[in-house]
Image 1 (tube, one colour):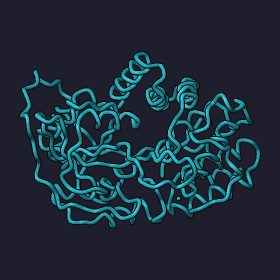
Image 2 (cartoon, rainbow, N blue to C red; image 1 turned 90 degrees about the vertical axis):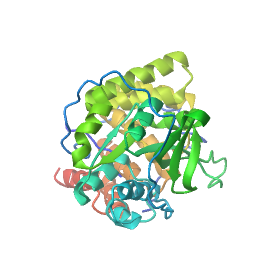
Image 3 (cartoon, rainbow, N blue to C red; image 1 turned 90 degrees about the horizontal axis):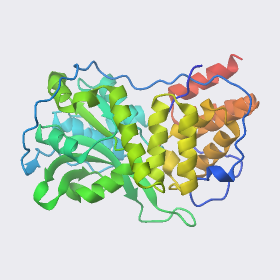
Length: 378
């Protein structure tokens, strides 16, 4: 069966979402199987051709302190940390564009509150001469090795808002950072933080804790001629399947070490979605939700939508997408999945409205266009 996609919003009115201070727990929902439906095709961002990984020799000791030449600092526009951080990363290699060049393509509506790493990779490949890739399951030592070899690294981390946007807001969100150095004597990375400022220090232990909710994701931009060097540094992580297998094993170890770790269970689900083991992924997401997740989790990560859809749990998908829209009314991803839930439950007419709303929120949103064409052709 074709599979749905996660991609990257305009306000939309939805039926009242369940009252909750965190993502609604699975145990609070009836796990109902609805009708059958084909879903949109997963369209992941294409990656540039990469060299075959070559086994690394025994690693040589890294310098204790590395500081790469820092690009001109870019202070982000509203909800624009992704484009601003990517602009700094590209500028490191001599690119002369701005955050607005990037956001104009991948975030054309300013109220869109999230840009996915895959969207940034797609921009690099379609609009620059550089290559890019995204991997998960990153390690502190790998980031140090990449930086010591001259590669800045983009990561997605936890961010805490200073203001409450609703009653009992947990103030949890996501933010991109560009790593441009490290300092082992003080156990810290040097990052460019588009919201806070240039040359910020983040201690390794804080960095690790804030990185965990995002499956330890990292993104690299590089000139084509450095692809072979990067392949040597990444080793088996260059291969996406092997990279995901390692990330899955790591998440399972973390869940074994602490069965109450909701992020470990969420990461298990996300890695299982990659392998299209949707029923098992849905079970892992159930556990994560029952343990408790941040309120905005589904603004940034969409694996549960795919898992519940492909498991035939359309009522659960509807509840979860409605909650996501309640927390982020401009989320085109949540609009898309609420529409697929409606269609799967037999309301094709209302589903079309949500697919159209997703296209208004993000003009050119391929997944919503596919969904609308699919429904109209039936």
